[in-house]
Length: 186
Image 1 (cartoon, rainbow, N blue to C red):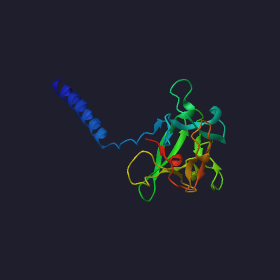
Image 2 (image 1 turned 45 degrees about the horizontal axis):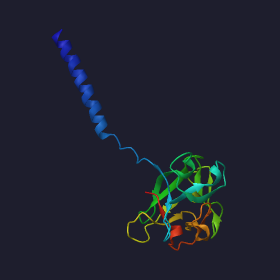
Image 3 (image 1 turned 120 degrees about the vertical axis):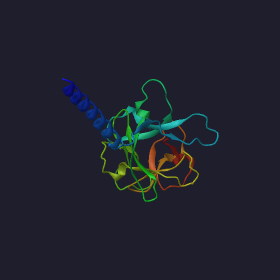
Image 4 (image 1 turned 135 degrees about the vertical axis):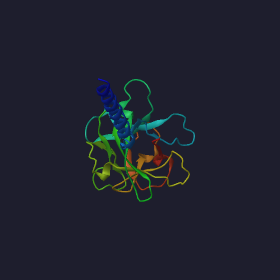
């Protein structure tokens, strides 16, 4: 009887140690995506915060992205984005997808992408470089306000006509580093 208790105790102890050892050598989980607002840098004299927003709460492919005042109450999911790092470029800068919390569609620069190409949302496709955005630290200052360039075209997410008005549509444009091309995704 004593021997059988010893064997049971040994078996329980061995199983516990093996389980603990398995936890120690298990691979770490991937970094989780964050869900947040994506704001544009305020121009001189501006007081309100403006963010990336899906026009008219669109859930459709080709729904237009626009600038709008940050809302913190009511239906805000059209202003919230799940940002997932999918790769790094050759300089170590992060390449991200931005998925809208309301529509579950990804920010996209469709077509060939030249200056003035509208920025829209499309069904997410993890292999589509038109849905990948590079957060570029081109100023070398480590600040949060940096350009987001499209991984397919190399053009920057841009507020049309350098407008800080609600409803200003977004497009891609040659990167020039003005406030209307500087975004905060942290």
